Image (cartoon, rainbow, N blue to C red):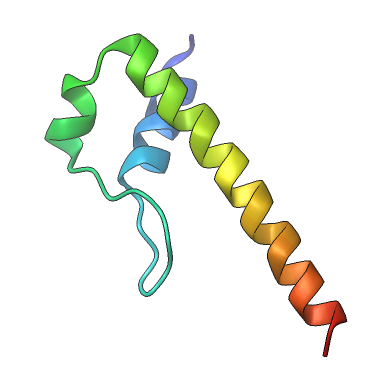
Length: 63
């Protein structure tokens, strides 16, 4: 894993859009995660974002 990949993973775990969905771990909480838990959360975040994007596309087509 590169430093950039590690940093991007931390960012994804901690970022929370205003009014949006997503995780909002503190940086200290994210740093305390085991590697396997961190990787699972990052994979799950990607899955959830894909699902939400599909739902937004579906809703836009229904208008």
